[in-house]
Image 1: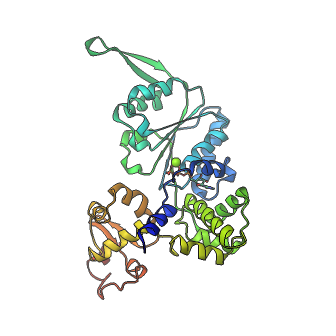
Image 2: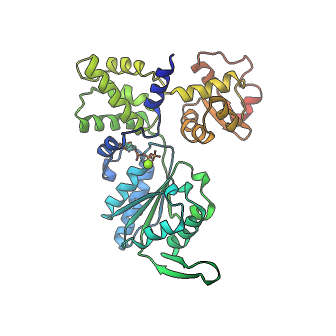
Length: 351
Ligand SMILES: Nc1ncnc2c1ncn2[C@@H]1O[C@H](COP(=O)(O)OP(=O)(O)OP(=O)(O)O)[C@@H](O)[C@H]1O
Ligand SMILES: [Mg+2]
């Protein structure tokens, strides 16, 4: 496999948004809860939260949306605002470096607005502390002046609903987490749900696709709508250039062969992680930082982007002592696990 093919596959399968993808993502974003495919639990819970608030005529409790990239957290945040007929103000944890930035946003909110903070686990400490009071009492303390003469002026803000999104709810501090009235835990999508995502996107983009074609794309999308939509566009390219424009199973298979997407939808990084785990560490257990160094990646990327799907695909187990490859991982790499594998130290770790 050449390096170029590697990086291409990498981008095709990354759950993170790629350059220039924002626009098409906006086109494909569901606008209403009813249009939002999958996540039946979160959807039902949210429906109740929103409907009850609507009936009482108050802004709903603050909502935290948690889950791996590309599962629809931003889409849901916008849907929440749309369902409430409310304006949405959008910012992100890294953008709120100074408490003053947050104070300005908060004091500009109108009653019932939705404030969406993406990557809320990356919010700086002073802004986070300001958020506590804002979430609880709809108040901010603005500090005026410096040194001994500084005074703090309490400022009322309009009742609003905070929607936070995070790929790492574990990285949130307890006090912040406790101030959300509802946490929606986003799960990976089932194949039939992704199939609906693909068919919906094909319709919006005017792509002709048959049932087998969309099922094939769905099955290789790592449980992630963002990847499903991206694979659809890459298969569309192939269909237009090398076939008659229509997406069938054969066209999909041939296209994904070109893009180096395997049947499980694993990408270069996934395979590198599994490969290192199996070949360099005998299947583990090994710490995530060590594993990340072995594949030349940030531990956070391995942990947040790569691992959740490997765990779900039954390739990797997270244990208190480190990461462990399952027998299935060896087999997926075309290797045979050692004869006693799974019956020795690792087996007790799978529990
Ligand atoms: N339930 C869904 N139904 C249809 N399309 C969806 C759904 N969820 C996500 N998508 C599609 O996937 C794309 C990515 O979703 P979104 O940006 O909401 O994910 P995210 O969880 O916010 O990702 P990140 O963690 O990277 O911010 C959207 O543009 C949308 O087209
Ligand atoms: Mg998002």
